[in-house]
Length: 458
Image (cartoon, rainbow, N blue to C red; front, top):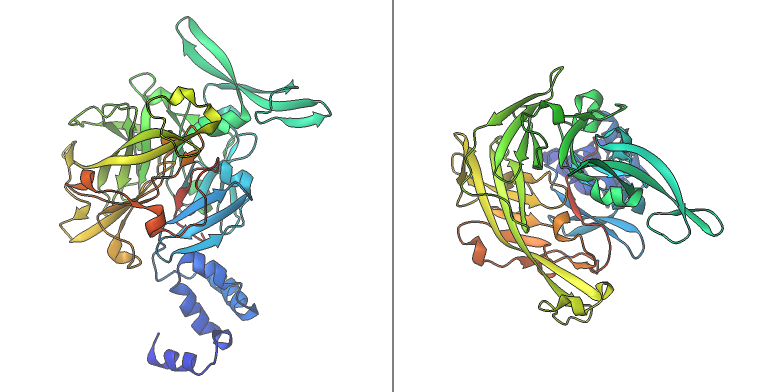
């Protein structure tokens, strides 16, 4: 504020009497979740918030990533800001939260109870339609079946009978093709792997959604409002590429794909009338495959491409805390608790068609430290800490569990916290949730895996 604006503000006993011009300046300096909540202070602030939204005024503060998580016990959904240590109750249904796969530009990619995907902004409530699941390759049809026993996603039609939506999915077997039936509930958990977007869905046709999905971790794309997904399986020279991650680079407008287990990276141009795929000649230092290894492609603020490898382990205890790692089969499944935690993280940067190991997460050319936000659904976030809240630390990773780590509930969310990066990161323990983040959640139930989202009013 200028000196005259500060003097004007001091003339009022409380902020409810500030002129709207000063309120708009104040709102422009707020984090997005705080901005939304400010509209509930009083009528004057609500009116200023409406004006702020209508004018589409830019925020003077970069929006810091927040953690969106659901609580199964009361079906409540929260947004937690690590920069302000504040929890915000979200006007989001438990159904929407349970189907979330990933986020970009402040929007969520989620599914309804029939496993059909759509996009939603959890702060504004705006939605954008996407093609139904039946238009994905290998999904051959949809049926409704009845059962008196199975309660897996079934809904009651009349007393004594239950029914469920079932999709017929085509698999390739040794003797040709075979069909398997998958319930809508299972399809929500299994079909959608990772997602990347080229722009905010508010841009309409300017937004391309690239989807990594099952049954073969293949790729399809669509724009909001399209009637069907367009499969990309026909443009690859090798049949059934098994992709591990997808990301969009705003610097060059291209998508980048991590292919198979050998670290091959492809670029994908979806801006023209036909998709154009290009193989980047990448020679990895080692095979990436491991049953307990997660890989992420990350775009830095300067447009550089990073490969982040995350190794993790899983141990088993009982609900009473007794370690049963050596003999897990002696305890019934419903009494087991799976403890998952990251043990090692490795960084590489794409330079001259190969990934070069990096000692730390910083850009020496401009003397800026970066922070990573990694977790479920991919879409890893990398930001320059100097542009954000001073509590955001550099050369570290803000972690949440990924889906591969937590497929067998209940799980203790041990990978919620901050891990320092660098040459000695393998010996540094994770700063645990209870030490750094004040969340009111038991973290020991079947609640959805929490995800990172950068809030936006777009």
